[in-house]
Amino acid sequence: MTGWVAIAGLGPGAEALVTPEVTATLADATDVVGYIPYVARVAERPGLTLHASDNRVEVDRARHALQMAAEGRRVVVVSSGDPGVFAMAAAVFEALEAGAPDWRDLEIRVLPGITAMLAASARAGAPLGHDFCAINLSDNLKPWALIEKRLRLAAEADFAMAFYNPRSKARPEGFARVLEVLRAACGDDRPVIFARAVSTPEEKLTVVPLTEARPEMADMRTVVLVGSSLTRVLRAGDRPLVYTPRSAPE
Amino acid sequence: MTGWVAIAGLGPGAEALVTPEVTATLADATDVVGYIPYVARVAERPGLTLHASDNRVEVDRARHALQMAAEGRRVVVVSSGDPGVFAMAAAVFEALEAGAPDWRDLEIRVLPGITAMLAASARAGAPLGHDFCAINLSDNLKPWALIEKRLRLAAEADFAMAFYNPRSKARPEGFARVLEVLRAACGDDRPVIFARAVSTPEEKLTVVPLTEARPEMADMRTVVLVGSSLTRVLRAGDRPLVYTPRSAPE
Picture 1 (cartoon, chains in turn orange, blue):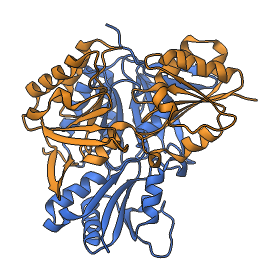
Picture 2: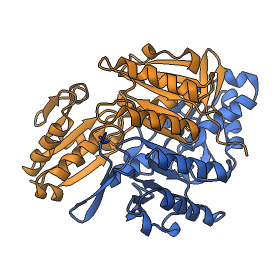
Picture 3: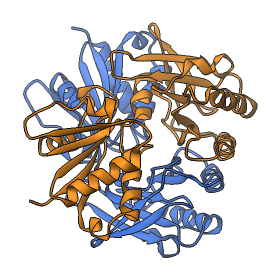
């Protein structure tokens, strides 16, 4: 039996946002590895072993997946959203680079998924409808100074912005500092979207001007989107629609 | 009958990358509007009218969709990729803002899809595995100076970059200039990925160092990804795997 590894994106939460490619690959797997709440989204069945692990052990998990594939198993590494956006794909390639040379002969595929910022953008309207950037606000793996530098340059470039991992119990002050940097660099009325758990029963969408944005509006299940200088908020019925026009003036 | 508009992303090309949400919504529609090659991806059936239109008439198409919904029809506006990323969602909201006031009472949903840069990233490995930006290189709707400014700031921020619409017959010189700006701002060996028509029979993936990147490697079906200073190229079997590690050094 020839083993393989597929690194699959389960999307933001709803079953209707899981691609048929991912569903078919899970049906063909012998093993699923991933962070506990993502593995919990995979249905148990005979012949499938679920290996759920805690947060912050991404490279251990990746090594385990590669080792099982080298032994002939068909392994799916599950991420939420898209595996290539602040998720497991990079961790698997880090483990591959540092690991056994014969692992490089394994079939390794990345199966894209609906990443959180695009699910959030769809719910809010089209805030990322023009040039934008995506920044992981966690400073677990990078210096805080780099985060601030990127924020300032992104504001100067007038990108719309998407922030992943805005806030954790371990560093509640980081996101407050992000809002300070943005207030200094952008206009007061820049729209900010707090999109929590989009497409799940816990979904909550909040749209506020930058002056009214507060750190406690975000948690680790929230993605935060910030408009560019051209982003507009329309009232449509009882909800705000946020979009960034396709045109920028001369 | 209550009309609605759904702005749906068909993904990069393969049926296996169309979400079940989009498939179900198309099954419930009375009308589909969109650019000719995207409408051609929707199967004909009794009760469904296909309205295919040419490129560069996005706002006319959006108005048509809103007008039909106001008349009680169930209209899907199709985009390739994700409708919120350089696609039809922003055009529909532009038409909504400028249009009849009662259009704002319509049910308007955006259905996310797999956008080209994430399909390309998945095929190449995980080049967008750390902070990144997405820039539309078309200067149809924005001044060229803004594109160059964003390129320079994105390079200074050390973002990985994804470029949409890199090259057209109408402006072959633009992408050559982009490569010049990048060569001046980034290292010579920065990996560049030309990902053409990912997930279709015409798929072609080319990975070269920045010094070897040539304008003619891109066309309008290509998305171009450029690594950050930390992006690595691994050889795995006969193919290059490009990934950006999750960590940045202090």
